[in-house]
Amino acid sequence: MTKKNILVKLENGAEARPVALLVQEASKYDSVIYIRSGTRRVNAKSIMGMMSLGLSAGEELEVSADGKDEQAAVEGIDGFLSGKGA
Image (cartoon, rainbow, N blue to C red; front, side):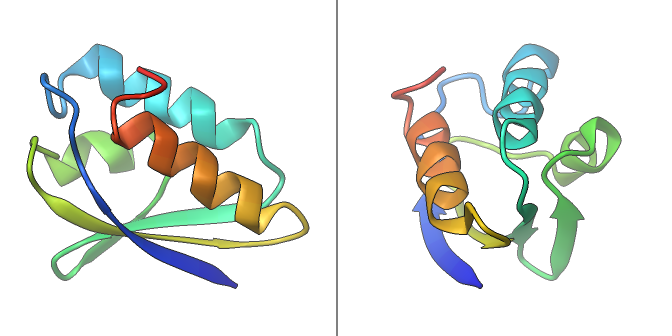
């Protein structure tokens, strides 16, 4: 399992389009990917779960992935949330 703390740098936070794109990014990987915000942990491939987190710019999250491409998955999510892939 790979874990990483990531600072959200998306200007629009958890609006529908960025969240949908984040779910698409997560869905590229075979690994199981979870995002934790505070005490809440959701599957990064679930649009409803991700919308329920209400992410905002400046928030720190923990991303964890477990599977054969877990390192690439965490780096891909990090790139997206850092504003490099949005």
